[in-house]
Length: 134
View 1: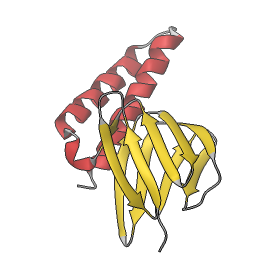
View 2: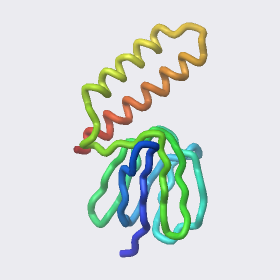
View 3: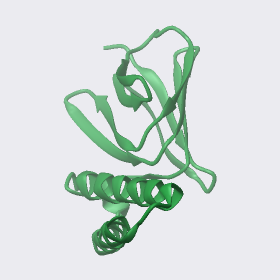
């Protein structure tokens, strides 16, 4: 089975690097699957669970936005934040979820505060979802 190189990088570190069979990511236009020898392109990513298939195994990584680039049989994900399931502190994610829900309930007419709270809630829920894959 052919493979494609995947690198997931954040400003702090390289989170993942390996040859994989398929990468499934959620871009701003929707979900996309990247297979070996995929045509080159770049797309922004949304807060989501990135799925990585290698053989019969599937790994999941919590991605908090960023960009995906495909070129020369390689996928590079430049993410604002990325966490493997075993790295996620569930208690911290639950606390972030509760804070975001309180902010959403309290936000009045300030659209910026509302959007920030919505994004924080999406990130917390994504981390909790990915943490279940430990």
